[in-house]
Amino acid sequence: MILYTIGLRLYFITIYIASLFNQKASQWINGRKNQKLIRIDSSIWFHFASLGEFEQGRPILEAIRALYPQEKIVISFFSPSGYEIRKNTPLADFVYYLPLDTAKNATQFIDAIQPAMAIFTKYEYWYHFFKEAHTMQIPLYIISGIFRPKQVFFKWYGGLHRKILSFVSHFFLQDEASKRLLQSIGITNATVSGDTRFDRVWANAQYPKEIPGIAEFINGQKVFIAGSTWPQDEALLATLPELYPDWKFIFAPHEIGETRINNLINLLPAGSAIKYSELIQNSKLKIQNQEPTTRYSPLKTQNSKPSVLVIDNIGMLSSLYAYGNIAYIGGGFGVGIHNTLEAAAFGLPVIFGPNYQKFNEARELIALKAGFSISDGSQLKGIVDTLVNDEAFYNITGKKAGDYVKEHIGATQMILDHIITLPFA
Image (cartoon, rainbow, N blue to C red):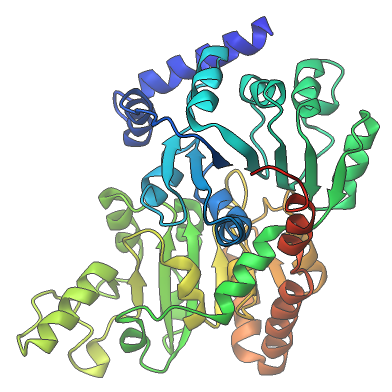
């Protein structure tokens, strides 16, 4: 317990120092410092590490909101990338940063929101918050949980972390391997329900949102979408627009700071790219019968139209895939790939970097030959060449990707069937 507390304090100090020169770290510190809890009589509490977990748990959140409209919904986030984007979501009555995991903070937070039930998505196991929920007899659920043998829970020195797991009322897991791992340490209150992300991305694909300006930019051409990219991804992808001049390319980088966006544009062929914000501005000028002012205008002659669109906002990517034909998912040259399922749900073959082993869906898409891992530019060009030039192969891979997602929906209903039978409101 002492080591756990010391570790938290060191983490806080590290973030505090980073906040002096890093915007995200500053948001992490200031968001918690300026936060004021509003006391309520009862709530249902959802916690998400970040934006990805919010989207993963969203089907349960939406269903609970509909089933229990009289209950206040409280959402907490650990990361600013979740909080800042979803702090005004209509799915919640209150949205907070999760305070640092101390006994005092856990008691104050839970006492203020009075949760009748707590739902954590995928991971984040906090000793004091979990203990306080257990002490107060608040049902606490993990949904879309997944475990790996190398995690601390399964090490000889992981006693405290195993104690944290003992506070969970029920685990809803993505796979049988996770269930076996929990059983190996004596935890049996677990159900393999699958991953709620499949439900989320499938629903999104059935009712895609129209994005202003995108159809005009595409102009009937085929589209390669690079989603959640990092510089390592972009260094390889930047060669593609010249290799495939009949295609349009849309980049949606994971980070959209001005420097990041400009660095990406500088990688691309000169004059080939336009920012989404410029695209929309030019469209407004066209409507007003004014001459577009940017040198990248997509509204001039066909030959002068840019071939690359760079998305300089957050929250659009899941809908962009509806316009695509092939998708590249970023992150595979770093800590791990981002969400492949959003693209696969639209029937797009997906390409990603070499670091995908922690993601079941990536491994399974590769096994189906609906997903492809690359390690360098030569491999990237090879798979893109095949998808672009072999129509039969392209059609088969896309269908397999879409069918894979469809075959894995249903986790939301399985979880709800368990949760709503319990008296929590």
